[in-house]
Picture 1 (cartoon, rainbow, N blue to C red):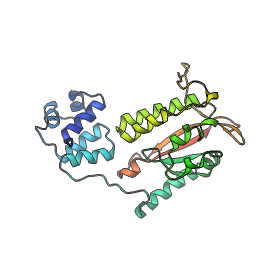
Picture 2 (cartoon, one colour; picture 1 turned 90 degrees about the horizontal axis):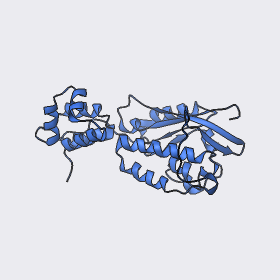
Picture 3 (cartoon, rainbow, N blue to C red; picture 1 turned 180 degrees about the horizontal axis):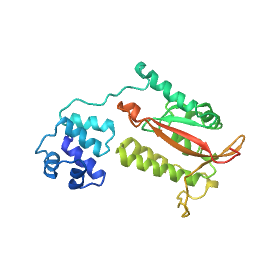
Picture 4 (cartoon, helix red, strand yellow; picture 1 turned 120 degrees about the horizontal axis):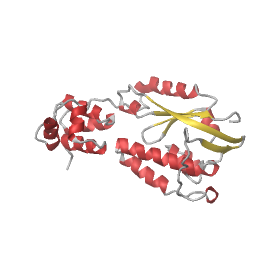
Length: 253
C-alpha cells in the first residue's frame, strides 16, 4: 500500500524528532490542522505540502514524492547531469574542481558516486585495483576497500570512523535506503591487519577536524576536506551534488 501524503509528513516529522505542536509552531499553522493532515481527515493543498516539506528539511526528491502522494504533479524538475541541457552545470562543476588545483577536489552525487575529479585526485589513486575504478565509482568504497586507498591511509581507523559517521548523518537526513545499504557494506569491510582493531574510539581531546593522512609515491600527505553544495538549486540532480575539496595541513603536503 502506498503511503498517503499525511503518512509521509508524519514520518518525516518523526524522523526529525519533532512533535506535532513543534512542527505546527515552526510552520505557523494550527496543530489541529496538522493533525487532520497527518490522519488523512484533511487533504493538504499543494502549497501546504511544499511549506511543510521546507520546514522539515525534506530533500527535493522526496518533496516530489509527497506531492504525488497528495495528488499533485511534481514541482521540482529532475534533469540527468549527462543531459545536453545540463552542459553548463557540468562545465561549472569542472571549473570549480579544476580551479582548486594543485590540490585534490571532486564532485559526487547523493550516493557518493563520482561525477568529476581534477588531476590531483587521479595522482592519489596509484595502486588502486582497476575494478574499483571501472564503471560507476563510489568514492567511499574506493576509500575504505582493502584494494582501494585503505592500505595507504595512515589514520585509517580515524578516517573510517569519520566516513561512517558522516554517512549515518546522510542517512538520517535523506532516509535513503541505498545509503543505508552502502553503510552496511562499508562497515563490514575488513581493516588491514597493520591498522589496528576494527572498532575505533575517537580521541577525547578537542580537535578541529579529522584529516586524511595518506601515503603516496612522493611521501605522506595530510589534507582537511571541505564540502560545497548548491544551496539555491531547484533541480533535484543539482541539489544532490556535493563538491569535496581538500586543503593541505602542512608544508610538506
